[in-house]
Length: 148
Image 1 (tube, one colour):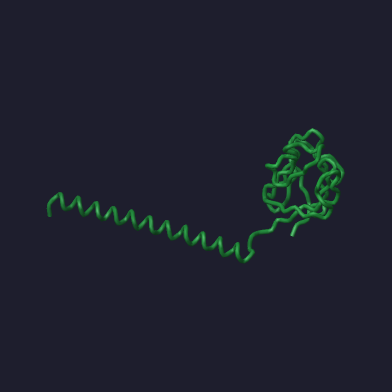
Image 2 (cartoon, rainbow, N blue to C red; image 1 turned 120 degrees about the horizontal axis):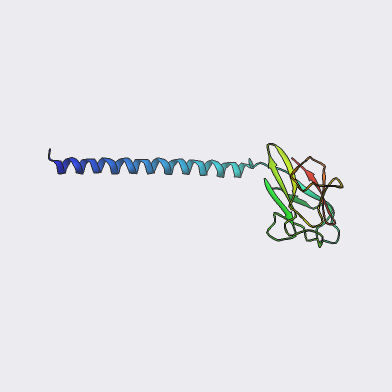
């Protein structure tokens, strides 16, 4: 067998290995997407809870309105927040609710008027744990945390 034929066969083998690798990666991604799609259809997406408006102040929010929570939920006046609080006393980026280690944590983001937790000011030096039934105050709005 000549050197040219050996190099050609080696190239064919390498191309076959590369294509086999790409097929395996494609199948793995396809299976993962099918699994996620199936879980979403079955409603297996984890529900972390919601905030219930208990006092709306002078905002268009309605008492009893439920605001869904994401694992990282920003609260404030700006429309870029997860939960928009259109209150004149709320800062654009007012507070942050974070789901970590199976618990909710509330952090004031240096807001001008502060954030309340059960009518007590939230310290600005770090997050505090929030439990079901706790009331978060931002401006004139009061929100109760409910978990599922």
